[in-house]
Amino acid sequence: MYVAVDLIVSAVEGLSPAVLAFCLVAMFVAAFIRGFTGFGSSLMWVPSLSLVLPPVAVVPITFMLEVLISLQLAPTIRREADWSSLWRIWVGALVGVPIGLALIATVPADFTRAAVALTVIVAAVILWRGTRLSGTFSTPATAGVGGVAGFLTGAVGIPGPPVFLYYLSTPLDIRVARASIMAYIMGAGVLGCVFAWMRGMLDGDAVVRALLLLPIVIAGTYLGSHAFGKADPERARRWALIVLMAVGVTLLVRVLYTAIR
Image (spheres, rainbow, N blue to C red):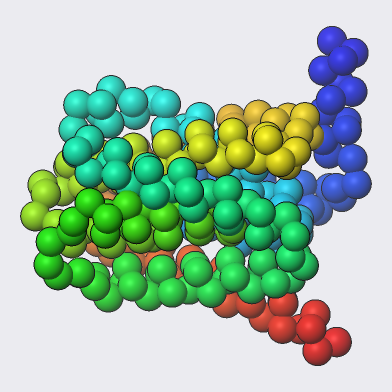
């Protein structure tokens, strides 16, 4: 018991009550949005927490949480995902993730924050416009999608946007596309955890922080899923994207303010 208490104290040491409260609220809101719309957790977790924590500390936490909350969807993913394309995407991600992690570990925190902000803003705009890619995808092109997605996963802790676009541009049934996206996010989270651990980024503090945040993430996801049946999903999706853009802009403004101060 004393060991557990020591681990918790170490994980939250240096974080003020205001910062802790902000992290809990941000995680809950993002989890609610994910439960309601089916996407957006990392898109909001990373820029929100990066407002008060270094991105290099935030990214391993999001990796762990993405894996943990995806486990409950494993039966659906196994049954409905398009595995023929997923293995090619994961091959590309296997190359891209460690490159991205090497970048986040060596560049200044504000540079990474700016990259996170721009990635979130661009992804939100693309998803808002409903942009679709045309044409078919060869094996190298599909692996390239995975490579770009893996790089973003490692560099800014945001798995998804290139994979979202890939699957939404194909003639696959929406259930298959959704399950394939969730499968990629879970797989990318596992890869991210492994490589982050190898680089010393996934330490005891990150694990304890992720476990402390997990209950509120589960609660937010559950309540968001429950609310899904009582509202217009397209309208909720639009509001979620507005929130994401607002978070991205806020983070970018913080970086610019710090740079000119």
